[in-house]
Amino acid sequence: MAERDPIELHDGGMHQPVVVEDAKPIVDATRKKKRIKVLLALAAAKVVIGAGWYMLHDGGHVATDNAYVSADSAQVTPLVSAAVVDVAVVNTQVVHKGQVLLQLDDSDARLAVARAQAEYLKARRQFVQTAANSGSLAAQIDARDADIGQAQAQLASASANFNKARIDLSRRQELASSGAVSGEELTSAKNAYSTAQANLALARSAIAQASATRGAARQSWAANEALISGSTVDTSPEVAAAKAKLDQALLDLQRTTILAPVDGVVTNRQVQVGQRIAAGTPVMTIVPTGSVYVDANFKEGQLKKVVPGQKVELISDLYGSDVVYHGRVAGFSGGTGSAFSLIPAQNATGNWIKVVQRLPVRVQLDPKELAAHPLRVGLSMEATIDVSGDK
Image (tube, rainbow, N blue to C red):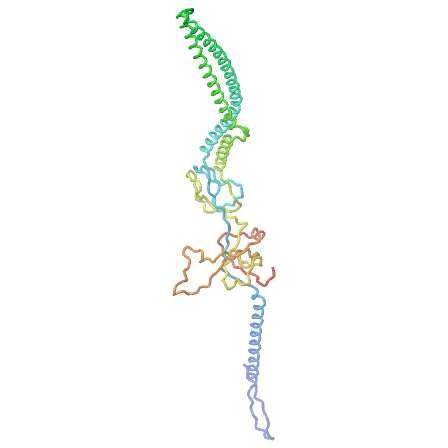
């Protein structure tokens, strides 16, 4: 700082010069103190304004960074056992619903279809044959009726012959005492009587046999009618069972081609060409990236005002704060994560220490925003729920 010339002051007419030092450092110190006071006042005002904004704004929001992207993934499992002949997709590949994922060897399935078709045709033919047998069995009943009529006529004839032989024998026995009939003639009469008597018994048994045969024919006809009564060739139980086997065989053949159940991304593929897989063995997973959601784990003390339907803003670590997702609270989990763990916490002990629990909150995202900025399962998110009451 440049030195200034001393100021001369005259006292009482005396001409002794008095030198006064420079006053600028004092002025600068005063200004500096004022400036510090102003800055402190501004800082205090900023703190007050920030606290007021927090009370008015953040007081209506709850937030957490313990949130992750989830999805209801579709696990692909074959429903038939066979060898793999072709794998049409790889991990990270985007697929659409109905797209071919896997092709199994269908040789056994085709043979099963051929056998089922043969059994089905056989069942239909047997029904037609059974229906035709009813007419044949009905004709047999008529034939047995005719046999009974013939046997009844024979019975009448045998009865007449028996009566004649009985009368002839009686007459000859009356004349034999007077010697008018020889012994030989009497013997012939007795033989004729015995023969007529046997023929009469035979005729009666023939009627019984014919009646029994007619009863058997009627039973056979009734049994045959029971098989086809009220049924057609398509509604017959045997035909329906054969048709069901054929449908099952065709379904098993169709299942040798495994299709994508949903739109999504292939992950966790565990199958190779030539591998024989059993029914129900997981081979890959399809993650539907277009319908993912967020499970945000809020502290139990933050959920007092949270209800389904409230607005949620989310930021992904993948895209940063430049991309903000908008969603709504879909619902709450049935319990905390620790409640469903393999070994749940047992707090009924003497050394229990309280730990703040977190409850998963399901957040549904906007499909349009997901299409613009896709997310993957497991990514970290920051979620902020508006609990001010404005939905």
